[in-house]
View 1 (cartoon, rainbow, N blue to C red):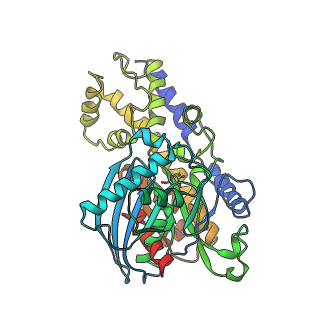
View 2: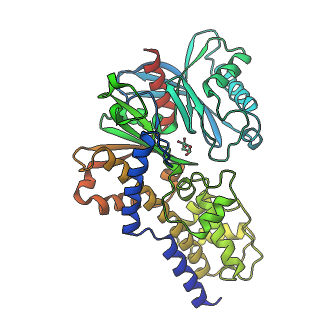
View 3: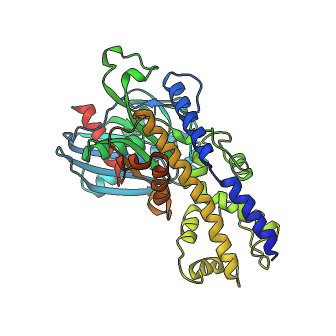
Length: 443
Ligand code: GLC
């Protein structure tokens, strides 16, 4: 392998993945501009969707069924809220959504959901005879006019099920639930996963005013003064607050590389979710994979192997695995590559692979930090108050250094005031949070 050529390639690559201070500043300004436009119903890559619920009071109480639909898994949970900031997941079942259902018809998808709820109620001996209030976490962009209606604007994260865009997902769900004979189950609240995460975070900590998901997709929501949501005409409540789902995955004013463009082109929503495609679990591995495939093509890595790294073969969990190998000889990476049939790799090659993965994940963390900073300074330009951010998702939980880089960048951006920002991992937020929303809706 020609080291010089490889080094040149890597230098060029890191330069194109670098997010400079100036890039960050520009991103921040653009983010604010897009937030403002989105809140006023003007053309914007940020949808800024009112959620028709405020953060929690900690007094919400009762037993609720929660559904969590938004990634590769679908979950049904029974949540118990104690009315004092405590929440318990009493039961939970996980169902894998077959790919065919993600891309079939909406009716098929919602029938699968209803069938799974039925199984959950029977298996956990909850039964079908008592009245049950159910909250639905549906993690896609929806237009709401109240807490119990939501029209799907567009699918994201690889879902394409027909007949859902433009329809009220709460009605589709209710129709399927009735079809499966669950007369006593009432669908009372709809929430995005970020909203659920913020509701859960604020149930425990009243300073919590931002909810974020770094998972299969990425998104954030925050607490807004109703008077600032220009597209809502509720003058009487202008000094009250409401959560706004930013749908930040669609933000598109970020410097892109040739790899981002190629990745985007091959998705079923080209031109959309540009920030999500640089940060989230559905795409990070694929960005690295495109780089590796290029390097293999130019014989800059794994020269003696027939490895191809075909589309989808290098997942974000592999990227996490590779970056977390701290053995002296990078033995874990060695084992992983052997499993792919890539034998006899040199230490330099393994290190190179690790470096590529780090370049990709570092950029993801820096873009995330810029977006977090944008939302905080939108709410509190001088950072006068404390802000707890409730965060969940596999990228946040498992990608080595992701959290550390974000914290470092926030410090860089806000100096000593960065202390006012607290990132809290909020587990099960998308289940517990919608139970809180259901409690508000039925109180
Ligand atoms: C996608 C969805 C968004 C969701 C996020 C995280 O970006 O559009 O609604 O919150 O994924 O699951």
